[in-house]
Length: 213
Image (cartoon, rainbow, N blue to C red):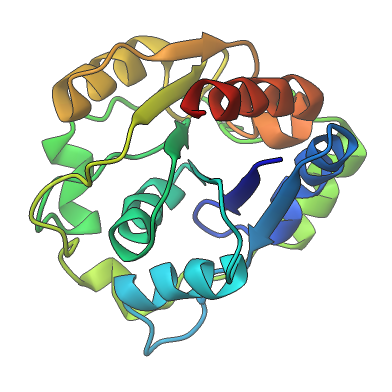
């Protein structure tokens, strides 16, 4: 049994993972979805990481999963506690001491031009609920340099979504190579694959956990 620490993206919440949580539990694993302190104006990047560490507690066989902006938090958790595997899902990959505001230009981000970049392939009722649950990103973390001097020594995989309108596949492939020196893995689905293809995503995560062992 693996522990999956599931980290949401910008403006999101633990709810974004609820279908994946159900699927992972059904496969005999222990998922922990975390609400980051994104609306706490005093919270910096290490407070984000500590929220995840506190939720994990004394669990072992940990796989940390970061979605979208969660890519800034996920590697910090690996610097705090032992982690078997780090999985970035349609995620932003920070460089040492990089500001969130600078990431867009420095990563060569390419806007897709679509109006709906998040929920275009999510069932309408789920998409409406996701929008209703949206949270503000008002913490000080977004004004702080990303605190690590180097990527943690944790096996890392990058999983892109081929139908992603936020981080398009061609750009995401390049981002993973340039920032991590790895070839990305791929699956179908848009940016919120946790809502559009939760069972398929759960299968991918379980495969990573098995590989880590």
